Figure 1 (cartoon, helix red, strand yellow):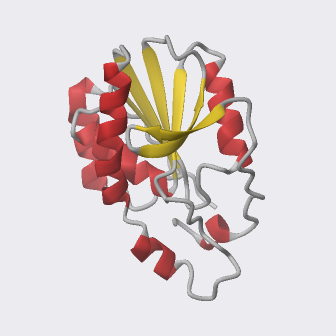
Figure 2 (figure 1 turned 60 degrees about the vertical axis):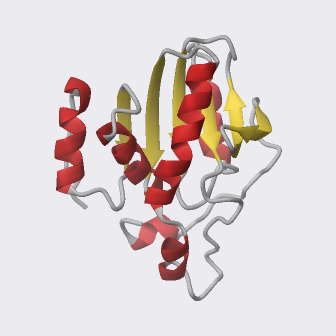
Length: 176
């Protein structure tokens, strides 16, 4: 991820956490979902290296759902979150979890959302997941993109994302 602090203090994962529910198959992926299935607006939340069982990610999904969105948090890392106690991580973990593969896996999820009548789809990605969101925006798969503490996102990705469908991109540099 972007810095060593990303790997420190991992969350205690909780497969049963959150106010939503886990679906075995949503667009071909296991996913945590929250909100009204009848909503015409959806948000795809893309996890960081700790996966879709991270409690704070599920709390965010639940909170966004309270605003009327149907929220989908796919398991793009296939129940293989980063393990801080593995001495081969993070390098091997990153090699085994290409965000471009998750971008391809997101397309059937977006198709499933559209099939259920969703007309507006936004996506937010955290750290590793930001690259997935950048690729979705560049491919015009989503109408809104949010990248939080992005990793693997290049300046060219940002430029292409800002051109996608007339998006507005705000950028702020944080200095340590």
